[in-house]
Amino acid sequence: MQRIILAFFFFCVAQANAIYISTSIGDSRIQSKNKIYKPGGIIHCAFEAGFFNESDDIVDFKFAIGIDRFGYSHSDGDKSVSLWEVYLKPVIFSITKHNVMFEIAPYLGKLLDASGLTDNDNQLLLHTPYGKHITMGNEYRLGYNINESFFIGLTANYHYLPYGFHHNEHPNVKEDKYLMGGWGLNFQYNLPW
Image (cartoon, rainbow, N blue to C red):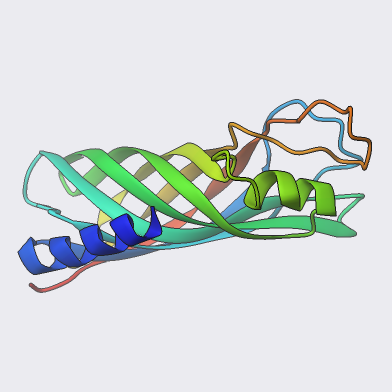
């Protein structure tokens, strides 16, 4: 999957006439029911490149490729779980009116690395041949185009791990599947292509 995304990225760079780069920073925490002791948040950050962004259009479709970090903390902030993924947003739908833009972007991701997990969790998420390292999610953005090049806005980013992990070493514990995410700020720069 990584080779396909990389080849697709270079193809888009060669063909695209409207490219942007974007970064987000915000909160990431578990949003679903859980059995974790005193859960909390960590800093979420994302970097992406997008293509076919026509900022003059009222309704626009584009796509993006990126990398991000998300997760949560627990035990009253003493420990944290940090997950890194590469993702593809195949269809990003946006509406822009009077320089105010609202955007919806579903995406698919592949986990690259994780820290703060037990050995069983790490094995379950990253090192199995059954596709358990795949994530899904949605991102929503609402913001303002300052000029033709710069956008600033609020973002809500949510990750869902269809295959979960345990929080202890007992092999008979059912997997926990969590929705993680939160609110943040997004900055976008449209490249003068």
